[in-house]
Length: 56
Image (cartoon, rainbow, N blue to C red):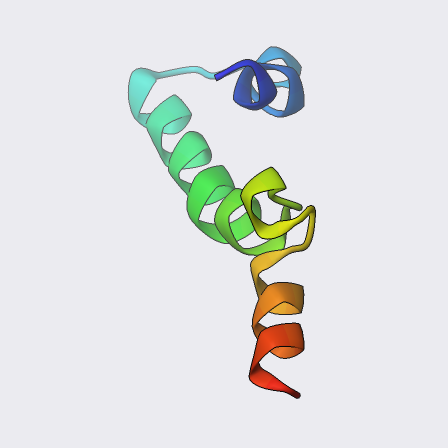
């Protein structure tokens, strides 16, 4: 939760809860899950991890 607040929530001025929910959903699904480096994946993005271990 700390990363989400620092990278997104504290930098936005949401008018409604719906705006906040949409923004957070997009951040998680579009950026965080696909493009951000993950400690679990040896600090690689999911795309980098797939490419390395699929032999691409």
